[in-house]
Image (cartoon, rainbow, N blue to C red; front, side, top):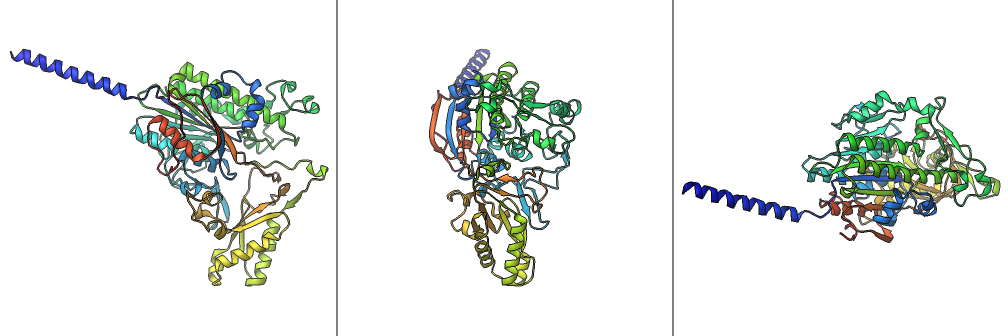
Amino acid sequence: MAKKKQKLTRNIVSLILATMATVTLSAQPAGRPSLVVNIVVDGLSLDYINLLKDQFTDGGLQRIMRDGVTITDLNFGSVLDPAASTAIVQTGASPAMNGVASSMVYDRASRRTLSFFIDSSTLGNFTNETYSPRALRVSTIGDELRIASQGLNHVYSICPDAAQAIIMAGHKGNSAFWIDNTSGKWATSTYYKDAPYTIQTRNRMQPLDMRLDTMAWKSAISPELYPDLPNYKKLYSFRHTFYRTDPQRIVHYKNTPLVNTEVTSIASDYIKSLSLGKGENIDMLNLSYTVTPFIYGDDHDIRMEQMDSYIRLDREIKSLITAIDTNGPGMDRTMIVITGLPSNVTRRRSKENEWDTPAGEFSPRKAISLLNIYLIAIYGNGEWVIGYDQNQFYLNHELIKQRDIDLAAIRSESARFLNRMAGISEAQTIDDIIAERIGETATPPRRNINQDFAADIYISTFPGWDIVDDGTVSPNPDTYPKIQRQTAPIAPAFILAPNIKSKTITGAVDPRAIAPTIASILRIRSPNAATQPPLRLDFK
């Protein structure tokens, strides 16, 4: 009798467990991805995509647009550098909230520009750079994914740029790797605990510095096939090399589509060797590509190079999808997010002055000198202006405090003087810019400023004017004069997921909505500073 009761009890328990398992399985979101490939593309434009779609493969961008969600107009409000734009997308928050207003910030104490992510408590691996994400004030979508899985999943980032790699890995990422501008090696920080052997092997056996001599960027297709090019441009193709005699060859290489191929190669190795997306938890692989204008060549007309970048980008996307299907979990278990970032690259001085277009040169060194002389005449002898960086002037706060001068007043006086200087279209004080409450409800440029590193005066120059790099700012690898042009802070985005129906979203979309949208698809929390609702998508 006792044995019959035990058998009956076991049967009841088995039935209950089976029922619970059935309920659990039925509660899982249909088609929920096990791998997220999260990509940002510097300088991506929907106009170029539409222009070149006939040259694209069927399995790359065409597939993404056909089967996924297309967002035509992400409006960033104002043109930011790639790091700040990436941080908005990954955190769902503005620079005023997430802290990242630029990859470089001006340090008043040393009077130099430094990386926003510099962290002396860490050490560099394969680099002398000591970086960490500690300065990032909020969580990222990768952080939230790690938290949701109790750290049992993996989040990796592979980006040519250090700031983007760190932002995309977030605080909780397993690793972040970027290309060191000096050695050419894939570098990281001791902040991150993982260093996949595939990238270590590449550094030892196939270092980029040893391969650059043999590389050349030339047209991927015949010049006759590029649309909307004048006949004279179709007569000759282009060729850009990276010889050892060029001290900036790694920087130049990182601004070509050849670096995208390097990123795809490592990403494919990760997918295969680390079995990404094949476990019970959702893994994330973060990548960055570039299609920004190439400003380092001899020819000012770079339309062919620009179009070639997009044709090569399409091939990289196809190669990545092939790697997912061949060695990964398959596209039926993978979500791909491609977010464009508006280009902030100002073109090198062209021959526009030969066509009598309005132009001029603005010298920061001269502006500092003249402004300082003007302030001396009003406030007495002293070094009143201590620095300039990225259209921003920095005043000597210590001297101003010693002389008991009202900071807002000297800022206003400085802005009034600069507004009368040739080439400057507008000069604003930080007080004017943040007159409204800075934060998520503010509009650009207010919400795009980190007050901890804010300058005193912000200027805009007239389109067509060069800002001459005359040694005023910290040494920069890109020393070419740049011609200023107004550009729209608009970029497209694409989401391809197994549980999302194809759709096109037109009209302006706030880029802060991307992170909450990804979180909604994955059924996890949004980053902790994200205030935008997710986009309305149609689930299968």
